[in-house]
Image (cartoon, rainbow, N blue to C red):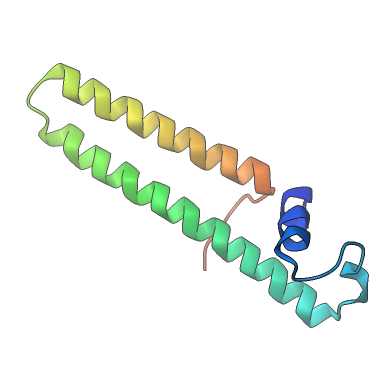
Length: 94
């Protein structure tokens, strides 16, 4: 588990600081899986927004709008990369 997940677990009050090792393996794996699923859900929202922007870009009636939507697409891809990097996740998904 990376530091970002670790901090979220402790700040949530789910377990006390320094008590991770006291949890059984099943609970540790379940918490880690929940964090991965939450990260995947957030990335899924960004991917949905990318798909919408692609659709809007394809139907835009001028270059300014196409450029605007392309900029949003690039930004959402950067957010996905930053999220994966922050949480130390390469491939996320159910």
